Image 1 (spheres, rainbow, N blue to C red):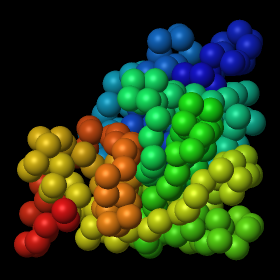
Image 2: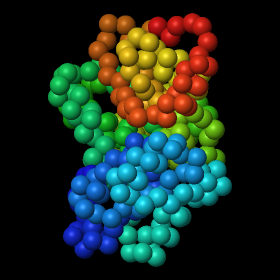
Image 3: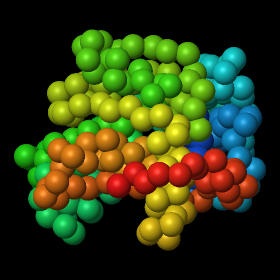
Image 4: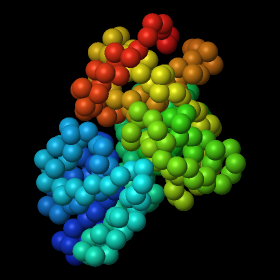
Length: 269
């Protein structure tokens, strides 16, 4: 919403385009609809029918691509040039990052200072925005980004000091199947985040099961990244006040049920 609001009237009239998936695609489509702006979204062809239906339901036009063999950035930029659309990147843009700070800002305003905050990491927009809000409102809070073990480009980048590019990872955390951090997001993360953690798909399934069974929350695998990261650090966090960023509750229920059924015995707590 914030990035669309920043556009000129002329840019809005021509329409906007973004390359997104999951809740972000739906949020972008809804924002465009509320502002009466034509929207095109480049989505992976294996996106769930639920997410595609919700996105088109908000009035957006969808162009599909193969996330393993095609470059969504290139497709989006070509369509923007051809039709005169304003291109809004999924994460590496100051206005997008500023908008992504809202949830952490709201959390900290409601609960006060935190000792640690765990946020999922894909391209880095949400983590960057959450970091900026935390450094302002809870400066002593430790901040952890959490990404799939199979797609640890963020962790590699954080520890090497430069952006690392990888192939599209094979993970159930679909919205975190990014290949690299952005220029803006990497700079913010490198300067302000305490560490980048990784978790296996198996741990994500365990967290999905725990949240459903103990807290009655339906949470998709990508949204469980922050929670899974907190579980990894649980012995170090005894007695501390922590925040965990959960999102993406509108998961494909057939896929959700199948993943929950895979969970074996044992407890994550």
